[in-house]
Structure formats: structure tokens, C-alpha cells
Length: 143
Image 1 (cartoon, rainbow, N blue to C red):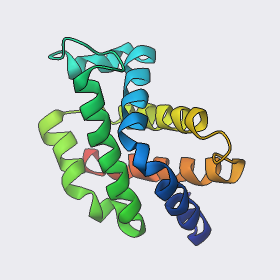
Image 2: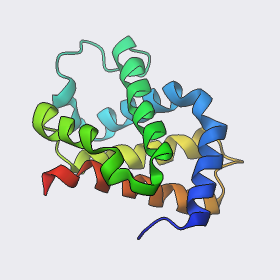
Image 3: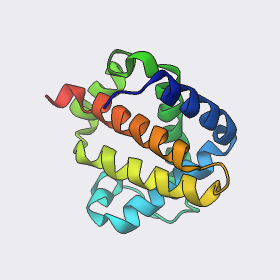
Image 4: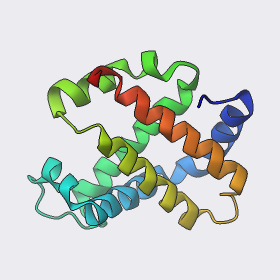
């Protein structure tokens, strides 16, 4: 399902609202993913501390949300716009593409918790479609 112009507007507006807390969102989403889906810890086995307050988790949470910001800015053609990021995950990091969906789910949970009044059903649907499109774009080089 592709993003409609209305979805794109909703995502951009919502992301403008929440992006100042991107590192917090990312750290919480990443730590939740590591707790709920322990198989994802294998990518971070070199970190001593995987807690939400860990410096590594906070920093990488910010990096992840930087990717989301990049995707918001390249929403009209995420596959082309995120090609180098997709290639990095395939050839260098060798991340299982199923993890993109797991992370997307955890991002949605964190957004709903942190922004209960802003995370309306309309925002939920549009942001879910956006994150699904982002996961597909990052999985593009796996095909």
C-alpha cells in the first residue's frame, strides 16, 4: 500500500512534532526490540550494556531515528533515496530484513506511549504505512 499525499502530510507534520525527541524515541524503541526480540541482540553482542540508558543504545537510537528523518525527507522515493543505507545493511551489517519490521513496530509503540494525544488513529495509520514503506525500501537490496 503506497502513501497517499494525505499520508505524507500527516507523517511530515507528526515527525516535525516528535523529532526533537528522536534520540529518546530511538533508544526506547531499540531497547524494547532487544528485550522483546532477544534474537536481535546478536547484532549488538559487542556492547556490554543493552539497557535503555546505555550510552550505546542511546547513541544508536539517535542513529536509527536519523534514518527515519532521512526517510521522511525522501518519502517520495525512499527506495532510491535510501539505497546506500539499504546496501550498508545488506553487504556490511548483514541484518536480517525481518528486523526492520520489528523495529518499526517498536517505534510505533514508543510513539503511542510518548505522544498519546498526538498519536491519533489517523496518525497511526499513516505512520504505520510510512514505516512499512521504509522497511520495504531498506529491504530492497535483499531481493
